[in-house]
Picture 1 (tube, helix red, strand yellow):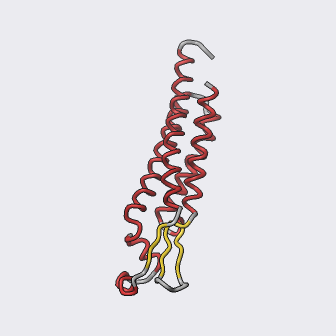
Picture 2 (cartoon, helix red, strand yellow; picture 1 turned 45 degrees about the vertical axis):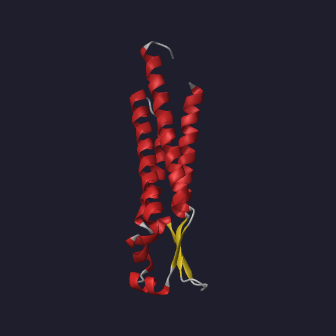
Picture 3 (tube, one colour; picture 1 turned 120 degrees about the horizontal axis):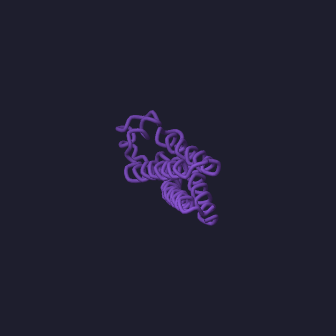
Length: 163
């Protein structure tokens, strides 16, 4: 039982760490080919990255609270919150990877009209941030599921009188 409690805590914490690092890392680099001028957009420069960072904070807070929560139902609820936050962050990262190079938010963050980028043939390279967010989100989901399983097992042992 201790192993699954520790496993859920560690796995969810690692997922939150990856989400947080991914949220602050470079999501996309844009510029003009053969020129030294380019702009790196970090996750937190976009609304998506801020939401991911909030999900990472929520996962860390929920994981800590599961350690001090008194009831198994509260632990299960917190485990579900961890899994949902991981799912949200992972979905945001995946959506960015699918359409990140052409997202209006990226163009808006640069403050340069799309037509101008098209004329210069600007490059848009995805950075590691969104990838880390997807991996962290998946790990966070697993951590949430492990936490819920531990809380469920803890509830079952209380029902039959085993401490």
